[in-house]
Amino acid sequence: MTAQSKTPLSLLVGLSATLRAPVLEAMTDATTVVVAVDQDELPGRGVLTWLVQDLSGPIDAGEFTVGDDCGACQLIESLVPLLEALVARGHWDHVVLATPPAMEARPLVNTIVATLPELVVDTVTCVVDAVLLVEQLSGDELLAERGLALGLPDRRNVAELTARQIEYADVCVLANAHRSTAVVRLEHLLEHLNPRTSVVTAGASGVPDGAVARTGRFDFDAAEAWAGELATSDRVQPSDDGVTTVLWRSTRPLHPARLNDALEDIVHGVVRSRGVVWLANRPTQRVRWESAGYSASLGMLGEWSETEHLAECTVVATGMGLDPARLQAILDACLLTESELASLDWSNLEDPFAGVF
Image (tube, rainbow, N blue to C red):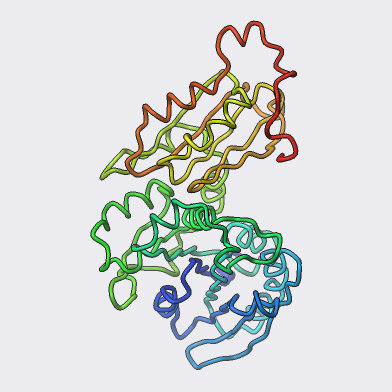
């Protein structure tokens, strides 16, 4: 199958189904079929509902049962045969998939790329609210607290979901731009979170002022690289209009207890940070660092011996009104001191992250 014979797919994500509606309309033309998945029935009935339509009207509808399982996993598993069947009909030359509000693009795209050779991901579009964006990126409210969790196992927070949706998008639609006095600053924030993205605005009508589908912008390798480990200085965008991205790096390991005690101070003023760190009591392990809003998390990435890198710490952090010197000082204070490096038995250090990862 050649690239020319594949059907392009545009993906639409974002927390607000209302703000996405005019964007979805802008993505649709006479040759487009739309698959829209909704999660309104998930809290009460445990199902995700879906609707297939084109400009002539509804074509088919149904639901996916989630139960106590991972809703995102069930959605992906159920969508594959549906998308396959639509492409096989040969009636349309463009597919738009509008995901439930709490869905991230990355796992869905990975499955499509791996299992549906008849489709080619063309554009990933994310709709964000200019009025609520900073709030959504800055808190610690769980999706479950808003009734938006994709099943019982879903413990993500709103900030984490919002950041991940933005980081994988080729196009970010800044909706409600007419209601914000800081549109330029918000555009800079989106570009810091994802330099790959093209930012278009949508005013009172909700209609975007630029292309949101069939842009040909999606690059799987580039998207995966950006959504993966942030570990180089070329990830740092120039500070502008109060938006700053900081790269912190050290060849010394972190003291686990001091890091744990400093977590709240580290994420203060940071809307998003990611990287890889080296904990003194786990000298062989590469540890993933990630924060969104007021929440930080660490997890296993593998062993340092599996990479070409020597053990080190690298964190990239983005914030609005962020003080780089303050953040650097807080992180530096978490490192082992020179005397600790020389005399401390690292393996005997208390592990506050035991049982977490």
